[in-house]
Length: 471
Ligand SMILES: Nc1ncnc2c1ncn2[C@@H]1O[C@H](COP(=O)(O)OP(=O)(O)OP(=O)(O)O)[C@@H](O)[C@H]1O
Ligand SMILES: [Mg+2]
Image (cartoon, rainbow, N blue to C red):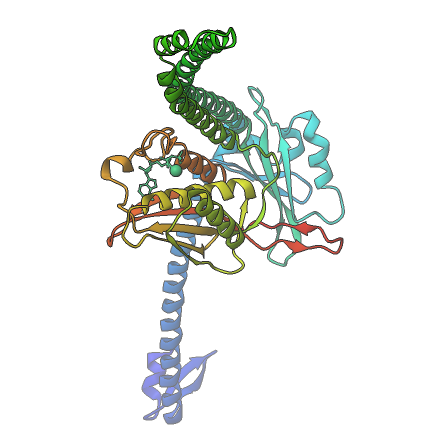
């Protein structure tokens, strides 16, 4: 403090103070600017102080907010969370663990974590805190010793915890009950198995139903030719007896007149005339029965042989040659075949599927002015595509919905069993493929068949081939 009396004694520009009874010049002319400097510095320090304080307050608020945020997150975690020190004593737990244990945090903190788990899991937990490096992460299945008895099995994850200097400071455990999850999974599994069984039963029933429909259809189809073969055989037998009588009379040396009378009476001429159509009709019936049986045999898809890499261009060529020969077709057959296109298939089945499509196309163009059939193959991503187009009348709107049904045919009796497309459809479906039919804008129909494509067979050193389906 300066003495006002002393300052009065001072010369202008001097600030004098009595210090221990002695006058001391505190501030001279030069000293004044120093004083101003000191005050300025103090102002600066004061401003800095205020700045620091505001900063501190802001940081405090942020810290508080972060703390509340973390506390809120920890409190809302439904998994249990236990933080331990390096000796395995609990440092902090979350409310989920308190609820599970039926104890407040205070009662749990400082307890050895191993004490909280059921005896059979204790050794594993204790081993984690034994001296030596702790593994960074570990998964365990633990039961906890709760206030109401052993808990559900929990899947617990343990991660090593490090302090700010990067030294091991303990471990963090997080866990969730898997007992419930397991039970739910088992229930789901049972439901799934039941569903699969129900589905298998349904498929079986559907198979039986379609087998029933097929048998009924076959019976109906066979009934017709069998009944006229049967009728014809009866008539033939009658004719046989008539002719036998007539021949016996001739051989017995009957006079000519009586023989002529007998010939007229037995209508031998009519019988002889009738024989040819009767035999032809019977043969035709037998052929129809044989056709139906042949188609049914194709249906059984005979071979249990594994699927192989089938070169489509080869199969298309032979199938169309066979179809064309058996139909004695006059149509022009054009082929646009992609080279090195392989299907993952049963060769025989793919052959009949394509053969059926060509058969139909040839039938369809029979009365077309310039009958022509186009067969194309191409790859489409993981599929091999075969298209058979014709310039016939196309498939009528009514027939469209039914062409893949067994025994659906628009062909005259004796020309079609109506099984061709159904067999083709079944083969394609068995191969995991699809078949479709469209009418072309310029007239005619196009059948498109798609089956899984595969790489060409790779020759192994032994000469055998290896197959790889495109995945
Ligand atoms: N290319 C086509 N153009 C027009 N109609 C067709 C064609 N292909 C099939 N159809 C129709 O689909 C019907 C069923 O064909 P599907 O091959 O199943 O039997 P089908 O040829 O009549 O007899 P099957 O093949 O047993 O000898 C045919 O009768 C015909 O009406
Ligand atoms: Mg057909």
